[in-house]
Length: 271
Image 1 (cartoon, rainbow, N blue to C red):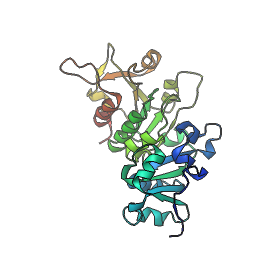
Image 2: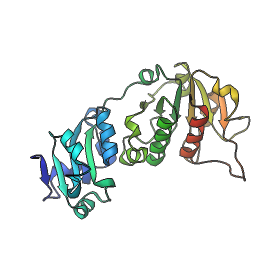
Image 3: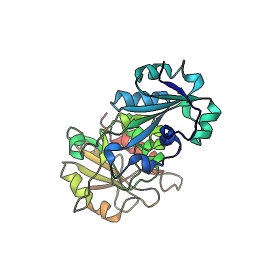
Image 4: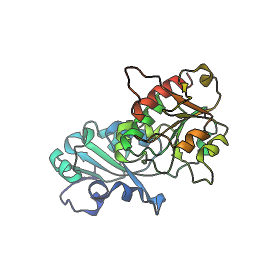
């Protein structure tokens, strides 16, 4: 395979996307059509390719060239495949590669909430969830537990950050997601205009237990989850049709937002 290139110069500009560019630089907010993300591990890369994302180059540990990376290399035979020994790659990227390979890929234009929610019955909304691990874990739960789409406020961590992709096991490429646009009113009203009832997950008075039967009878429901620590904004809770919570035992007052999302999606998803 003539496109395999042994790494000899760590300073080669082709390797900047793996070794020297930050997540924000890869995102390229000023020119989003030129944005890039990094997919890690064969299964994640394969899911991204299956979703139609275009590869730019790969960074592969030598020993995987003829084994677990082979199928993907053949599939992407028109892009550069950079390779080196494990220790070299670890020094270059600053961390141990999961199953020995990375792939730089082009971002796709984001669809609108109207487009991805047009046929949805259950959606998740993330308000200011800034930890990429939590974003990835929530999206993985959403994909597994019958949620049709995920919407994020602009302050959320981007689902195509490397850690979010890795934690999601590539499900960020399998479930529709997008950011909620800036609107003049509370974004909850924007969601209601899409014909969804809104349920805020919050620790406050006058909440419904998450297993309240009437919630499962709602045709189109959005489940809104708040930022780590602070939870949802007061104005968000007040604007929602329902406020719900997970009943707790042993004096525990709350779960991590990713864990809470899995419980909510299982209980309220369409089975």
